Amino acid sequence: MLQFELLKTEGHARRGRLTLNHGVVETPIFMPVGTYGTVKGVMPQSLHDMGAQIILGNTFHLWMRPGQDVMKSFGGLHGFEQWHKPILTDSGGFQVWSLGAMRKITEQGVTFNSPVNGDKLFMSPEVSMQIQTGLNSDIVMQLDECTPYETSGHLTTETEARKSMEMSRRWAVRSKDEFARLENPNALFGIVQGGMFENLRQESLEALVEMDFPGYAVGGVSVGEPKEQMLQIMAHTPHRLPAHKPRYLMGVGTPEDLVQGVADGVDMFDCVMPTRNARNGTLFTRFGDLKLRNARHKTDHQPLDTTCTCYACAGKSGVSWDDGGRDGFSRAYLHHLDRCGEMLGPMLATVHNLHYYLNLMREVREALDAGGFEAFRGQFKSERARGV
Image (cartoon, rainbow, N blue to C red):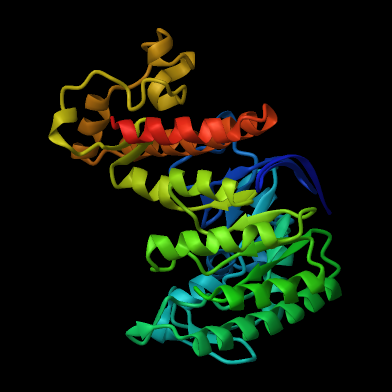
């Protein structure tokens, strides 16, 4: 089941509400990535507390471990990981693509050796739909080929991008047919491909719209291309998708990318950046990015972000430093944890980064509700440029 209500617009920016089998999602929304059935380093209760409405699972990795039989015995991913809000699962296509020389792509599907035990495996649109049906994810993604920005040491040509896009289009038909055969009660999204070529993006988009998917994604961005080209595809594609259906930009990106994506008509985002960067000592704040490993933070008593109400910054009180709170952890303490390799360090940093992303989307929704998104966007850019 999927219902999408378009509540308000401002330019191409949209305020919506997405109803799925496991709950309601207010959009625009950022979706934390939970590759192996967990958002790395974060307790599920913390995800609830910070306002996560929907999270991701990874079809490829969950297929490898723990496998379909275990997942089916729990009735799907919700019961297995004890997350009872909506879940979106990717198709496994990106992970197979990232195996490089370890995989062989044909019209039938992808043959590859398992990175876990070396077994020879085969992924097809039909297999992906079967795995995702067993996961019982609220949103299922078609199997596609992620068109690379570079192929064999050269920039992907339009001919190569077309060949890839047309195969993804045929795989979309097969995914849709198998999804229907399995009588999956959830929602299947089609994925627009076409590389960095607007004409191919348009062809892909039109073909998928004709198939009448419940929702659509823009894939094949943030795969090594210059930022200018990614922004070009973001500006071209999302707002041309059907207005009455949700739009998902896959694997993007920085806080600036999210706000720009909303301006371009995107409803849903995911990215590993907030969790991965947290583990590597880079924190996102209202006033720019903070490099926790810099020596200047060794004696700094301030929280990561003086305006933030996450547990890392505000502690149990939930009151920001600027509002008189003093219960959070200092930059000096998190710097110390990082230097000592203590696991609490990346855990607190991850809580902060995810809270920042989710709070940013909440502020975007409030700005859209009030008809002030462009004003918010200007203030956001000004604050982020100020620097910590």
